[in-house]
Length: 112
Image 1: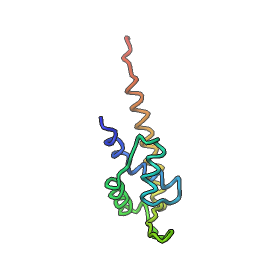
Image 2 (image 1 turned 30 degrees about the horizontal axis):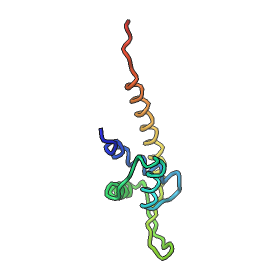
Image 3 (image 1 turned 45 degrees about the vertical axis):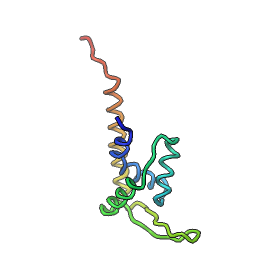
Image 4 (image 1 turned 90 degrees about the horizontal axis):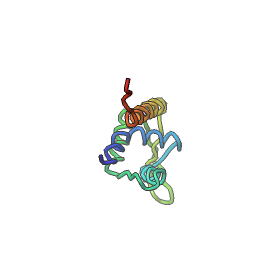
């Protein structure tokens, strides 16, 4: 199985959680954080990230603020109140799914 498929299915949760943990982030920071936190095992392309950010914004989960930093314009993303609640919910769902998957992968039939 391609690990990128697993990441893609969890991308909204990853993005929401990173923004929640850091208060606000811009796109490159998000891609860099994913790579650094995973020790290079996960990479998030701009082609995957920006449609996700636009979707989260359309859903009212994140909001943007444009700032000029060192002469460069950056769009920072932060969570709305609704986004904070959604981040908590999505993380709980993902953790539960991971726990269930771990249980399935180590399951053995009992000889009863």
